[in-house]
Image 1 (tube, rainbow, N blue to C red):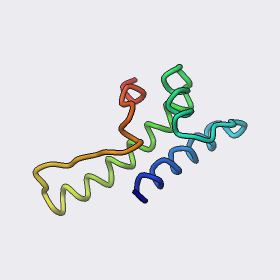
Image 2: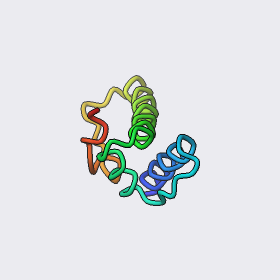
Image 3: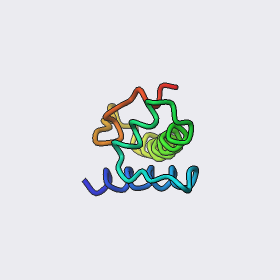
Length: 83
């Protein structure tokens, strides 16, 4: 699950860039903040989703898979990205 750890760490890093004084240290806290309406938490999750999408675009173009399955921490609460 190295990829999962990297995705979570990058998302937390984006949040700290947007909110330098933030004390958030876990992905669950970041998800809770986004669900509570924190604009910077939502922005960090959206940025991570953008980069995941860009990476998947390359995989789709190169391999043309019939199905792509996304699992792990980043998918636990999709509602945070629905905004």
